[in-house]
Image 1 (cartoon, rainbow, N blue to C red):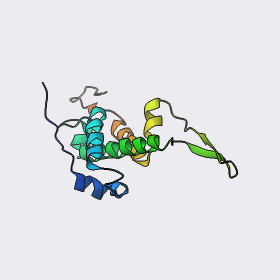
Image 2: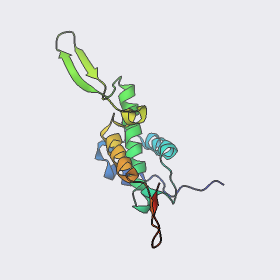
Image 3: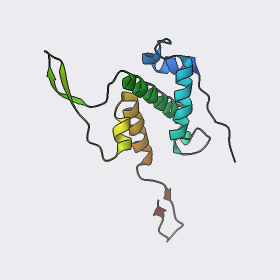
Image 4: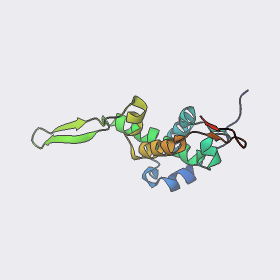
Length: 143
């Protein structure tokens, strides 16, 4: 069964929440709309799940939209994430060291401040799982 998205992209709202994307020539609305649609492939845009329960689904979708837009911009400019560990002024040499993360997902999200915030949100929401309380005299369980 296909369900319609719970949230739609609102250009004015997005640009208000993320002033770095205020320039509509550098970040045209169709590009941001496509990033928002793509964000829905990573984050469920529907009426259930832990993000929805805390009212953070739209914020997470917008963070992923900003992350995708910035990653696309960085890729177009030939930039990648990392920490500058060396630089040379004459002949312009810059050395980057990639952050060390346990998986590619976290590495990819760490490439923008929006992805880092999204990763932190995911980690906070996944801590501890769900707890099912038991009746008197019985043990509960956690998953």
